Image 1 (tube, rainbow over the protein chains, first blue to last red):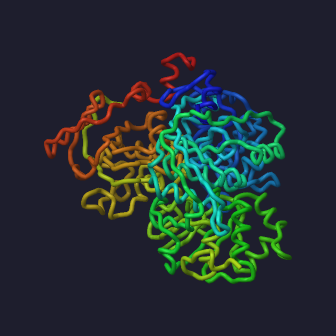
Image 2: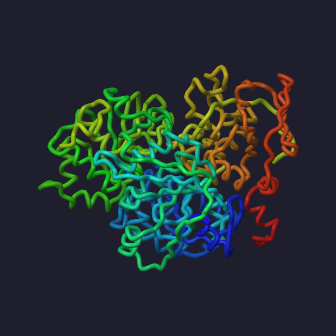
Image 3: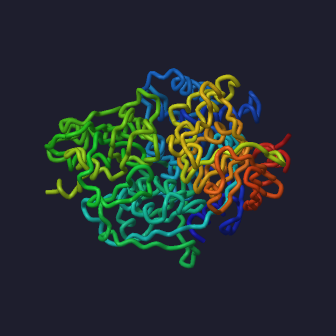
Length: 430
Length: 187
């Protein structure tokens, strides 16, 4: 069996499962946020009764992150609904706005707080919940109804997915990032190339990759239609997890004769920095093919491209330089922001380097990655052309339907911010 | 899910993502407030670029000005319908607007699942480019038992892919009623 199959077998009390089987699984964790939490709690009450209690208060994580720094009254009401429910159910894992406990983007806060653990089953009311597959667990996004069902029962039905295997070999060139690799994958198989399937990332490049890079890969499996992404949990994983939680967990590996839907091999030495052109994540082009394309804005942030390693990459590129276009920097979480103010490149902090380069520094949240209310930091409100380290560039994703978004790695976004046109990051490597 | 769904069809292309179905800026209306939730109908498909709205002609509004219910009952679309975010507001918005079925070449997984488990609409897959043969405004009938779509305007008949195991959940009206019916949840 594959890792995904083994996890689903264990959680459905079976010795074995095969792709296509429908199984009811026991859920280890349910995560929700301010956009989908209110609807989920409403359905829970409607179906289980006004006085119903959740199945296990320790297994629910509530992280407001989407619409935080806005004047929109409806958005604030969403967070209020979370507060009321958390209080009523006495939920211990809540990261409230305007408190020292506030985190920001759920998919990055989850690992930071030790909630992503090998071998577990995690559901979240957000499509990028698949990010946590980087830790060798089964993690996927669901809607409010399914989440409400879990709240009451701790269970959900899942169709066991086939697994597609992506093997990366070779040493990553210094200007290339995990984002380039996943854009290469999506560009190859298309935005529905992995529909209903698990995507397994392995090979020596992945073995050498840090958790942040693996998270970037798994984060964007949804952009290929994938159900979940998965990386084998190794020493890098267990060290990261053990530093953040005392919880027990189990690491699974792919059997030698595990069956895959298909296998794709990449030599990373042959991959060039890539972009996804408007308006689809699979609209792949080499940076060299679109170099010189005029830009109005650059954006570095989100669960995909707003981790500490992403800002270190941007700061390496921008050190001592000035941006030519409006450049927005949004740390995924308050912890990432803290690390940016501590991590130094030569004598300056990452935060300082980006600020001195002229970047506009925002507060931790999803911010303009998904547009959001009209006063959202960095939102595209007109016909702007933006290069972004985020995950989606469908029409209107970052705000206006008239805007255009190029997706790229933080290296490429930073290099392009410095020139005002799409630029190969190599140009800024000494 | 009704046995027969008859009405006008609204046609869309490939990769209609959830931001086009209901833009993120609108995800703030209360779903349990009958008046407020009409906003989801009002803004359903408002993120679709005008040229792709109501194919093949385009520039056709799904919801008329100041209304919250559509004059269309079935959406026909290309591949990967509902890709993107996991927001259940997407099938809900179409449901509130009055859409009872989406007939697409293929669906993105989470939208498909949300449509079924919430009992919001019937998602039928065609496996081929049906959206290029049907025009916005055509009168169609969908027999959900046999999976047959009849275009009454053009006198054409299409056999859709079987619903398979999810049919029981759809007929029950969603995952909660299905779980009660099968004894997994108490009445």
